[in-house]
Image (cartoon, rainbow, N blue to C red; front, side, top):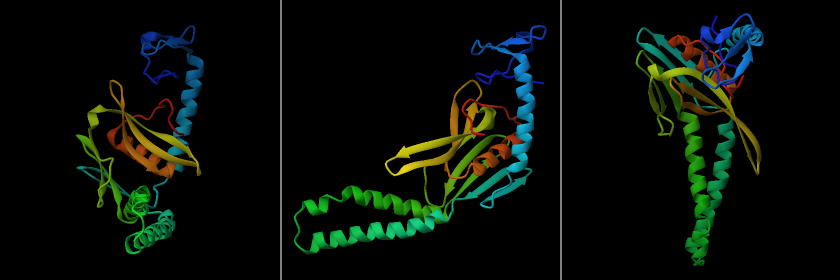
Length: 234
């Protein structure tokens, strides 16, 4: 049984554990902790992981292809939210078209043409995002050499290529954004790197099951033992 530091998640060598006093010290962060609590937590964590694996079925918008050459996970972006965004974009862009029609045909002052420039930029961005939501998909491909992420057919940021030998652990984080219009929650998938550091794999996921499913499936394919990472969701 492996023991990991409850503070930083580092693996504890057997030489740093004293079974007579049931105490241990982490070389990475110098934390002192009781082994009794860790053993109990490890058992509970194992039971929890079995429940999570069982309770995170494959989402309908995700397709998995696994062959001898690698693992391919395809996630469609589509959700009912984009139907609402269609009407929102029509209203937003339609108002701007009407505004510029007045500004350019009624001999309006120049400030009338300059004033809504920021609104035009927002309209273009929202319209592009809405169209991408209907047609785009994310492809995560894993083989013996690397993990790659691509978004297509419409270009989108977040593509990456990462050697699998650098991956120590995958974990999901919850992102809470607060603004004038309320609070929104999304989920992100990260890879912690051997030797330190992390790299974002996926972001902007509205459903935690999507991030957790991809995490479990990639870890299973790469033979990575799931363990707790500070700040992870679930």
